[in-house]
Image (cartoon, rainbow, N blue to C red; front, side, top):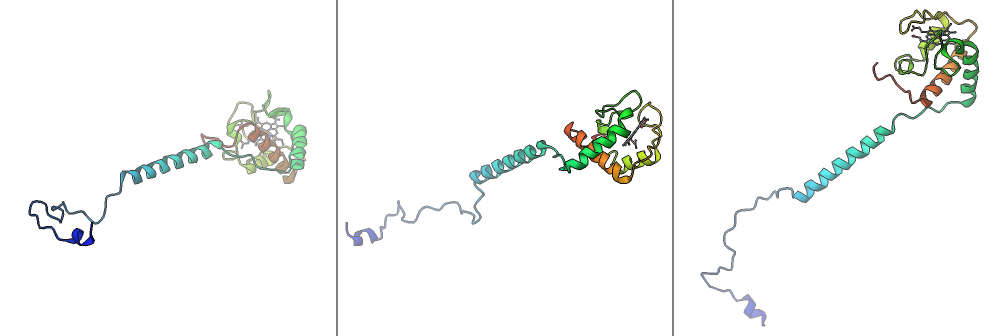
Length: 162
Ligand code: HEC
């Protein structure tokens, strides 16, 4: 086949060389379904990954083990008689391994104040907690480090009702 033959304009009225009038195509092509599928899948996966991370939950704070151990000693000597040697309470005081005493409800300063000024009874029916003598703020900070470590080991990070 020669090139000439191909190029020759064909004048056949029934079969126009120019394609018959087509609906004018808009210049902005609609976003194809495939693109929407990709977007939707990305959003779903992103959400699932986000939820997965959220489900991992809070991570225990890394604390100086010597401080935690010292706090445990002090707790045993000054607090365990009422709050229990395992922090689970006794006949004379409440457990501290409950969400009520999580940091967002009873922050570290609440421990300082409890030791220094005592606690008028309000959450339980054990009566008031008297101030505990002979402990410095630093001692109480060590006790708090111990209590928080034990709370976190118990999965207590915050009081959801507070
Ligand atoms: C003689 C018993 C007793 C001893 C000893 C004791 N507590 Fe308590 N403590 C209580 C009682 C009872 C309550 C609960 C008061 C209430 O809310 O009804 C309490 C409550 C608390 C609270 C909650 C404070 C608040 O704001 O509600 C903290 C914190 C606390 N104690 C820490 C300590 C620490 C730390 C020690 C040791 C240094 C200690 N307690 C020693 C009896 C005691």
